[in-house]
Image (spheres, rainbow, N blue to C red):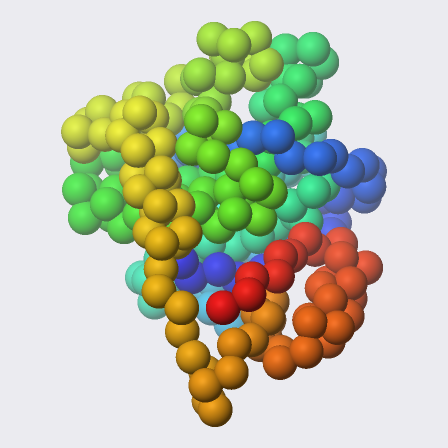
Length: 239
């Protein structure tokens, strides 16, 4: 996973400052033929490329709408695939709709996959894999499983999201669906839990945080505390 961070601090959703305890993950896709991350994430950080229209989502109400998600997956300026975290994972997003029909906002992390014209198999496979990796990461972070992952259209059927078709208007075109997506996440979680122990440097085991490795558990916990104080969730893994 190629994970980067650009929090949409100008979006009214971020300014609302509400938090949740994530109970699930909701997969969305953008519904527009534009695979470039710069369309939604901005301003340019040197990797995204310039959005000459400045119509990204780092504005109070993008396109006049109250919308915001936790992450976007799509293309950087050089054509490579990346994930951009755009809200703290425990922030209440505006991705499932409004009112009672959008109650998944209170429980689910939501991310968008940038669509192209839906016909490019290579692009689809690259973002599909990136989305699987993101879900594996989030499942480990919040003690979730593949069973806690749904797409927007499944959320509508469950009565917790507005009436959108994503991602089932796209995935089946490339012989995938949410069941196969969840199966891929399950496989990723299984591989992660069964990975062999690794020795680092002098052979000692280290407590590992997202941003570093520490021989001392106390130092790892200090770093994790600093992450959480800035609004980011993290986890400690003992290798």
